[in-house]
Image (cartoon, helix red, strand yellow):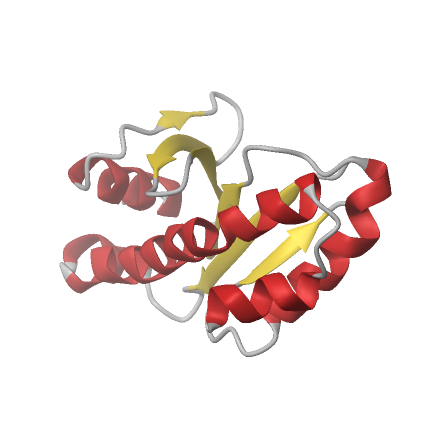
Length: 157
């Protein structure tokens, strides 16, 4: 029976993401090219039952812009249905996270079912679409003194 990370890796390969697997951890890396930029994606499988998909923002937030970015991301997160933005206040890293817990689905069933690949697609594509949608706003918050509320209003207009 395959491990959950093997199933996720198979989905990514079939979907032409060309993932790189960490040799000692259940972690996969791949790149994504959106309309508004290119960034790294990270997939972490925890305890063989949880899959977390991260879009890693291609830039970090300078210390002096972190309060404005926190406002921007909080406003962006409000009302999001699937996933959320996170920012590490220590280093300014931003990521978008989606996840799924498959603890109640036997791995052999996941391995045999075509719909299981749809489960991974359902956390992957909304994730990268949200990073792509908000990335121009993230860049504006970093590069200007525009009000985060105004930037969000324009994006979500």
